[in-house]
Image 1 (cartoon, helix red, strand yellow):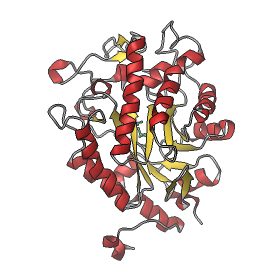
Image 2 (cartoon, helix red, strand yellow; image 1 turned 180 degrees about the vertical axis):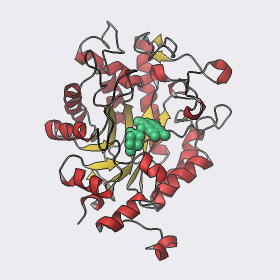
Image 3 (cartoon, helix red, strand yellow; image 1 turned 120 degrees about the vertical axis):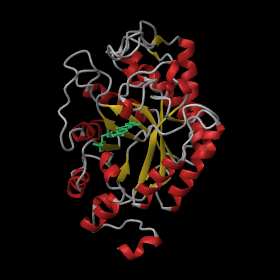
Image 4 (cartoon, protein in one colour; image 1 turned 45 degrees about the horizontal axis):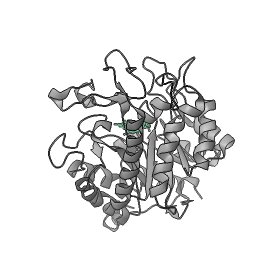
Length: 359
Ligand SMILES: Cc1cc2nc3c(=O)[nH]c(=O)nc-3n(C[C@H](O)[C@H](O)[C@H](O)COP(=O)(O)O)c2cc1C
């Protein structure tokens, strides 16, 4: 029996297999008007295709908890009820395929207000639907980014509340899992790292102070997210800095704290908070970080990053390095990767009746 196609139970949720889709921004929502931040036809077709392809769980792309928390003006959001209604079409369809609908709740912090990557991805101002970004400290990401406004304590509390409100809306929208985006140099990650957090109040300085915002967000979300539903957290396990940065040791320590605060699974990525670093990219390059968290913190983990081959994915699970694998760009190339891998490895996967003649 293939480990990749064994169901996985977290709290009261059973996920049909271990082939999952990580959040991937599509930058395809309206930047203004009543449908701002709401998914449309593109999002429906995109997520539906990976669901009919047998993907066990789909984490919908970074979805902003407030307009100024979007990476670009074209991001999805969950700050109003129009957005909730639009998401229901996607979650409803995913459910018909047995795919678990999850959503990544995000605030982009100092990396907010940028253009779509295929238009260069540079910071944009009000003339292109942009805005002034906020951050733990007035430290820009790099020389191309504007200096962000430093959040006041009152504003920090407001953002914590926005995460909770977005989680409440995620439930109304039909999601079964919420993932808090604590990675890639966005707001929560900016608080965690001494590289971006230079505060001298209760939210900066010591390790305990730097993780305070992350724990407050987790507590606020867990308080409104049902006890029977899992909560994920995505972390950048290292920022690949020689000194001063957030490290793999910090991640193991944080994982234990998150577990105590009701997080059920750590989605282990890396990087994104420091510009100009060298990342040793290669097949499965982030898997060792996931394995360490699973081993040392006893926290369930999903591994991500250049996992593309069925045998490779199967080994990661069989070796006990992760509880699930996330395939990003490979699922963009091959929406029915799970079905093909099941064929190769001898696993069982959902195939829509309409496609039965293809098996
Ligand atoms: C088009 C695209 C959009 C992405 N958007 C997000 C995102 O919204 N949130 C996030 O945490 N990671 C995002 N990522 C990172 C992926 O989730 C994943 O971690 C990364 O692509 C590495 O996995 P892969 O090698 O399987 O693609 C994005 C990646 C791509 C290619």
